[in-house]
Length: 131
Image (cartoon, rainbow, N blue to C red; front, side, top):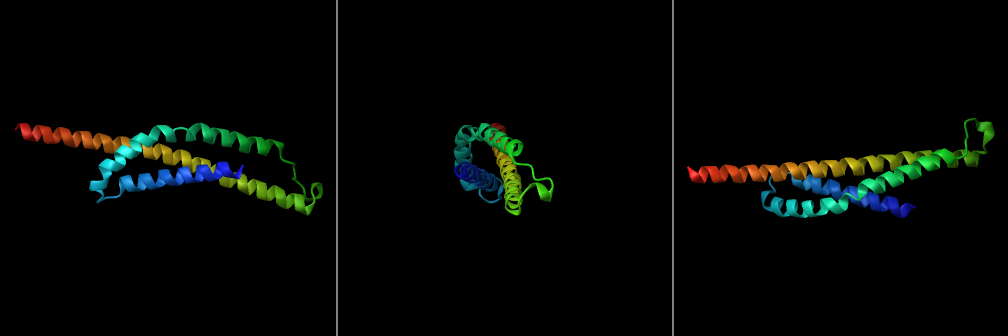
């Protein structure tokens, strides 16, 4: 199960780096190539959405089937610690899922905006050259 979380973490990190590089000022020379690479990666990165939903269902299933340790008397100290660790891991994994989805949305939005800005700049240049 840990491999799934590592893959999701790397995907979220790659998305965050691409968003950062697309939004940093002063990288106009790299931006055209980066936009082309990012646009080509958006469709494969879309597979993150169902993957995140699968992992979210896994968290929910683990939450529903976990042993209940509401009172200290119902569990041994070892079971109680294991339960607390499981809850903390689930919260961390839920944050990772949210981050991956938010970074995908940001990457899609920023790429779309940068592409639209490039198109509008080309249109302005064509109008200036006609005059």
